[in-house]
Image (cartoon, rainbow, N blue to C red; front, side, top):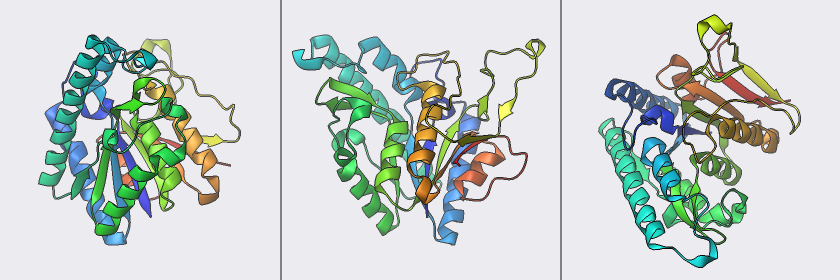
Length: 288
């Protein structure tokens, strides 16, 4: 079996800054979790795919230069050219750092930049076949014993000229095209989905309960969250939407999805394809 772990930008960077990593100690704990999870999976005959977000190495830049909507059919202006080159440099800086840190922890990571494998067709609406080259390379790396690591990226787009392809979309498409995927883990900076944004609610405003289990019964099931920082790929609302889409579309394969917090026991447990424990501080998505 294969687990895909999405390392959210909020977990690996300081999203309130620009090109800033998460605190060194926090990032080291997460990277250590990935390293030990990889060894555990390997011992059990399972495999790991990593996808990391862009965080402060991508979202502020994409917003500043309007790279999500792209330059359409008019062709890139000098400002677009400058912005596109800049965001790609920032993303490569982040990806290189993540690759080096994981390799130093004996995780045989092979980095894959989506820009090299796909030209999207109206971003999220891109047909799955367009992702097949990317998925085939992932499968080949897995067959050879490596850990593929992809990332949210600024890619060329047939409709928009360019766009931002989120790590969440990449996770979904890989789950569709790589049949042995059995779990998708979203690692972020909060424990899961709350009734209210835990970064905004104050203790005196009342109890803010974590939703431990979301059973997806139909497509109009909603969990509403707030987005408080620039996030061109959808933030927590996007994670909820993609988690529900994953468990719904791949219900026959019994794929589950989890949103959990970086550095916590729950994150490591879910990375290793273990069963969630009762009372775990995370949000599990399953299809009924």
